[in-house]
Image (cartoon, rainbow, N blue to C red; front, side, top):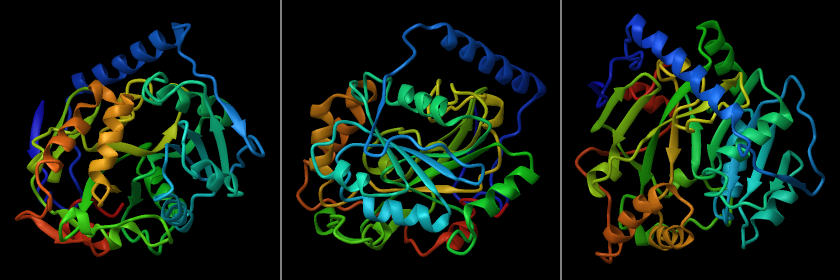
Length: 343
């Protein structure tokens, strides 16, 4: 793997240079994986609609795919944020929620809600569900693909809607928009940061700090990788932070390798024009991690959440503040810091 520091990358954001051999290898890897998965007889996960059922997308729609489980604290701000930047349809699979998540989503006229007899882990950590949604709603169009605690931002997103960003990406021939997950956390102890979803207040008003440097970037033949941030600094975990939330989807197997490594691979090396503000650290972070460990649906036996339990459970007033912590202001701040560029 080639490596570079992402602390304060050059304006224009890093796109890792790759040789002709690497580009050809990337295309071949994509073809092999998609061909192999198409031959698997068990590469499906049944889903069924709830409420008003499935409604076809229009050509002008900007759809967002998300999976959820017990997310009442995030739903008001999540839906509000994405509506403001231009999402017109939400395609959601609920993973057996036991709180009011389903009731809230069924009341939203722009949400198509589905359930499944499988759990998240049984659906290959949700990838098979995503494939089924792509089969239902169609390919050869742009999709957003995020989790409920991820808020996609890009330069001046407060004023410029997603169709403008997409038009700029298309002019540059970009079909996969990489976006690092930047973890936000409160300026004081986690125990003081209550985020309960009782209003549309944005989570960055409560968890308002982030690491402005201290990231490492690398690449192989399939994707760009990013590690670091507070989870690398405090939890000592090399958690993968790079995702590709905004995609022009050309195959129903788009997420077959991983949501961190979408197909086709050769589209995964574009400059960085966006980020995902990621929110794991509120007053209920320990309880959430303990529930995730008990649920046993996550990658590697939920080892990341086990580590969170060990670290947060060892001290009563845990704070994630470090030497590189600064307060989040707006999307333009990320452009100024070089965390992403203006397309």
